[in-house]
Image 1: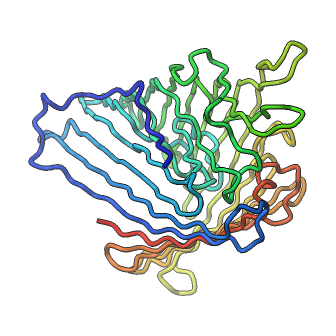
Image 2 (image 1 turned 60 degrees about the horizontal axis):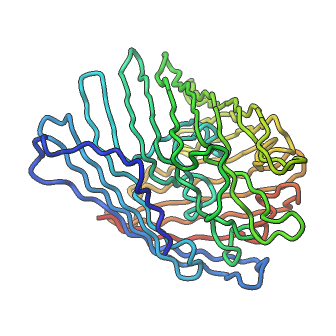
Image 3 (image 1 turned 90 degrees about the vertical axis):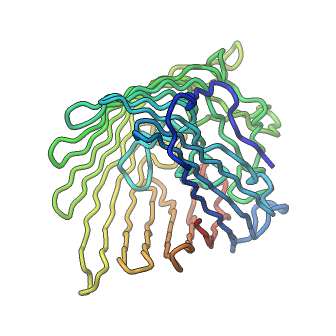
Length: 410
């Protein structure tokens, strides 16, 4: 089992001087997940199935005056076929204190920035848990000191991030993996401090009328690695490369009746590891990227209790075909159906088409409660007409899958 728990740079407040409520609250969930890949495998050792079980718990204490709290949320997954997916992580382990308009959080926590549906472009604090899913929705816990100050119509928030979490990867024998093994034991850092480089971020988030916004700057180690082969003539492994990054970003959502207008945009000043006459070296690289669109909700469709949201977003990256992301000139169109029934049935579906080469990514997600403590989720992802230029999707072009997950809450 792969263990991904940080042990350095952890900042924890002590609770010994606080009056703790009589007992903590404990909640959790256990999920059985089964994936089926209908297409023939790209590599002989790959399996058509991927079965696993996961567990997530949350323990929460609060002081009698509610000004101090402590949260602990461990997570783990045990997989049968794709053994690399077996891992554990501390999603959250932090003390939170409130002092009038000032709030301080110290420990391991998760932070989300962003507004758009298909790509969380500006979300940069936490590392992706790549073993869970490829959509960037699941995150590793990040050691941090977070200080926020309440201002009119919003908050000013500062982050000190003393420890970097490296991304973990599946083995080539697993579905949804790269054809070469990613050598996680030999990452390449631009900073001499490597994972101990102290990152920081500032964010102003708030609202003006119907506009919700966030303006932020991050400075530190890039969460998304680049890759270089261990040998340029006969590569056998890929080395993850983590350059330094300065990112200035904004995200906004404007509510106009049934319309939600959404935007995320950023400017990045970073570096690329490039071969030179004297050997590989980091070369400065800067670019802009944005994603934006709308969601329009039709309430009570077909004279029922159901609501249907129509979604469309455009994804753009200034680097074009040189971008290390498949979303550089793409269009997403989809819909979100909420039945508003006792089961809380919700369905989200859509397609992302590359406007340069017609590569197509299809996604369908559906969730419903079977009873008060059990829920079922279905997900289907399909890759169609993938162009070799879309290197991220081309490596997994045969890895369409249908996933069934049953979750028990307690």
